[in-house]
Image (cartoon, rainbow, N blue to C red):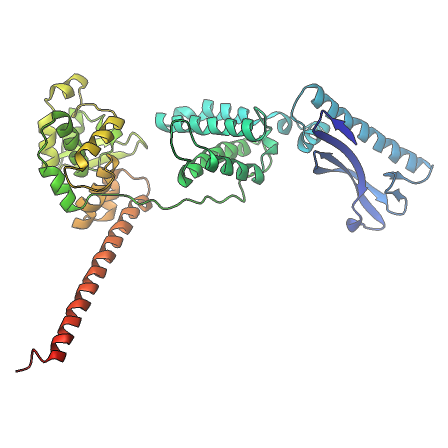
Length: 427
């Protein structure tokens, strides 16, 4: 046993796999151990089990066969120890996998690291991703490297070392981490998103054969269904009819209402221009654009309330400066201003701009009988399953309403029974 620095141990053991003995011959292996982690290397030799000395880890006897095999084992031991010494001299991370890779001459497994795949992914994939998606990858990568530094006390790690335990450790780190800009710990779905981005990078490494196994093959994501808040018809009407003196808040309210009647997201709304409004084959006006998030085409027939708002703001000085349909306001400010509007409108919900898109999908369209396939097209969804989430929300609302009806009917029935018992309905 050789002690490396203060915490690293390294050992080499030769052994025969007795359970695979055939014709009294068993396969010969070398086992390398680093810090308690073991890895076996087949030496492509079979040994007579009667001649093997497990204590000395050599062949008994002085004949030519014994001398040749024992000399071969000495050479293997020397070469494995040399691989270990070279890695140590280079001040590199030492693992059984890396020593084996160096021993068998597999440079691919030996040299590719987590930082390598991060750099490769960003160079090859970022031009295909939307800016916001790229930004989220950079955040995830920052967490990955922070995790390495805090939990493993290192700046990088060989890709061959990534395993199921590494993924679980990263998940636990994320769940316990509180970002500086945030007052709460990272939520479950956000944790899963960070792991999903790591998974995509590691899968890329597997596909380009930088690693020979996928460490994520046993990992299962645990996403928690999120409640998609929306305004009811009554709440939407109250917001529309709210008397607002502030020009700033009135503009924000109108942009929110426009999204309620079109389903346009904040990012897409900010990019709408006069060219986005097109006269359709039905001789009515449509919004035709592309979703910034996915690049999917979006075609929405304009309802009268949405068209009125376009007419109101397209010649507004703030809109004309940017050449857009509506004045440009940051998403952060929009959401902050909406909270100022919510209370006087009597809305108890956490009003955010994205809630307008949910309101369009539920209150404005689904509840009024618009087919879900049509809604999916107007929202620019890639999969119908994404839109079906809104249908489940409506089903829950139907269920709640029917429960209220049941309770009302039961109450009416109880009143009727009591009246009959009292004889009040008998002449």
